[in-house]
Length: 119
Length: 114
Image 1: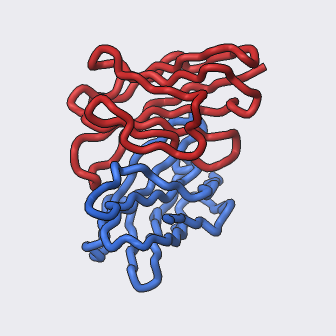
Image 2: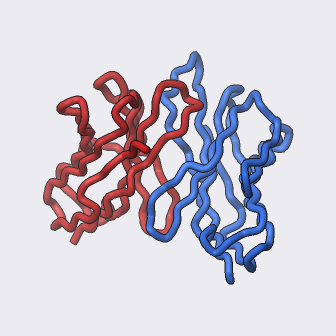
C-alpha cells in the first residue's frame, strides 16, 4: 500500500530564509509519480511541482527547487528566499501506476506541513 | 486559465438529509475525482471516475455515496443520508490523460452536518 509521511508538522521562518519541506514515501510500484500541492489559508489546493520515478534529476523553478532521491524514498521541496505569501499548508502526494497500469491516478497525501513565514 | 468549479462553497445540512455536491471539471479533462479533508487533517481519496463509470474507490466511499456525470459537464457527489462525521471539505479534481498529469482541484465545498 502506498504511504506518504511528512514528519514536519509545523515550520516557522522569517522572511527571506530558505526552507525545506521533507517528504518520505512508501510504494511497491516501480512506476510512480510525486507531487507537491500548496493549500493557502483560503483553502484551495494548488499544484506546484511533480516528478516521475524515472527522473531523479533535481530542478529549480523560480524560488522552488526539489530533491528527489529514490535511494532514500524522499522527495523534498525547498523554497528559497521565503515570502509571507508562502505561508500555507504544503502537501506531498504520491500516485502509483498500479500493476499492469491499473491505477487511475488516485493521490495519496501526506499529513501536510504548516509553513508560517513571518515578516 | 481554465479551472475546476465547485458549488456551493458551503453547505449546511441536517443529519440524515441527502446532499449533492456539484463540480464542473475542466472541459478537456478525462479523469475525475472526489477527495475529502476533515478539518485539520490530510486530504483523503474518495473515488475516481473515468469513461462514465467508477474506476476506483476508497473504503470511505460506502453505499451512502454515489457519483454521477449526468450531462457531460457536471460531476456530482451525492451523500444519501448524512452523518455528523461527513462534515468536511470536499474537493473535486480533474486531469487530462496520463498519470503524470497533475490533478487540478476546485476550491472545495465545506459541508457542515448539524
